[in-house]
Length: 216
Image 1 (cartoon, one colour):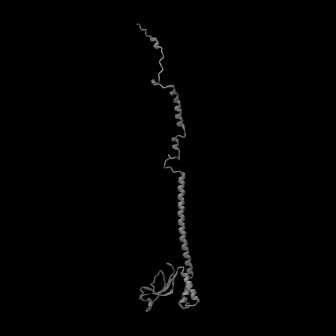
Image 2 (cartoon, rainbow, N blue to C red):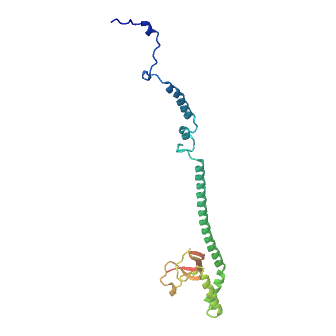
Image 3 (cartoon, rainbow, N blue to C red):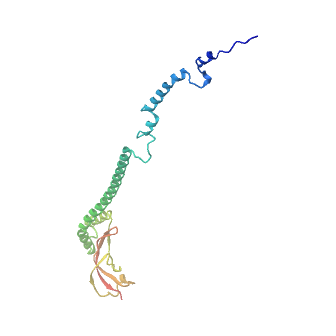
């Protein structure tokens, strides 16, 4: 049986077959979707509200911890001013309270000091026996008791050791022998009280004016 001869011209002019999906080439549908992907990516990069730009905005949690907000600094400054004013007020109140007490004590002392001549007259009358009884004796006692409520105290007596802080020596005389009030005295001693002294608390309004002598 004879075989038909092979026609070489028929294969040479034929167009090459289009490569299929297994040939590695991109299909028309895939090529068409590529521009859409590029547009979407560019849109995301150009979006002003992207997370990268939002994190860089000032005042957000991503801001540096070393930066202090102006309102915070102003609040701290006002708090410092308030604390300073409060401390000044407390010091002022303490100073006023102290000055008020000192002013009251000074006022009482001035009044009592102005009444010392009256007290000297009362004491002189009592020493001479003129206020032993009667209405004037009662008035004098009430008057001295009233002043005692303000802390006025009389001091100075024969036989006391001389103390320049509370005594004012107006005379220095010889030691009077045989006076029982001076028994056991040592050193410079008060032998005569010319005017009693007065004090309020520890403050001496007037020292006792006395005559002194040296014990033998």
